Image 1 (spheres, rainbow over the protein chains, first blue to last red):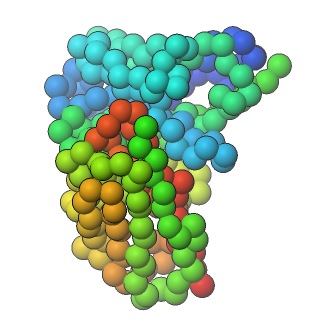
Image 2 (cartoon, helix red, strand yellow; image 1 turned 180 degrees about the vertical axis):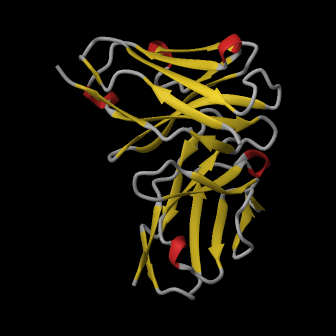
Length: 120
Length: 108
């Protein structure tokens, strides 16, 4: 059974960088059958796709976040990462990491989610 | 970007009734890359349907999906107590991937 777990600070100051780690167990992040992605959820905007990464390092970003976003992967430790810089209150959300099947595109496994609040 | 509009916003039904949820896209969704997710309070979304009409692993046959192009439907033939939740559609045929705003299926 694949399991994803987000970790990182729950509070980030405005203008600073939000950094999250997703640790994957029960499946290899180096599989060619999956992308690894980040999705966030707010009461106001609902679910928002942030971006994906493939194990080889190819990244796919939401253009609305592209200028502030970096997603990377560490296949040796079965983890991938999110960095979002210059955050504002609008980036306050529950952040999920998830696995997306490469061929049918469904997000089939999700982490439990972690609330990140942008506040001074 | 493709905007997905879900209707109705809230569906008030009784157990045993049929639920029909709509998801309309602002543009054609390539290759019917539409998925539906169920979300309960405090939980992550769970896949229900992918490829517009394929049930995800572990999803019972009372859930079905249909549609193509810009109009997609999730049907729950007979609601059971565990089906009352929020449902989101998602398109992944064009970047950026987008989600609808959700339909809440609540107990009447």
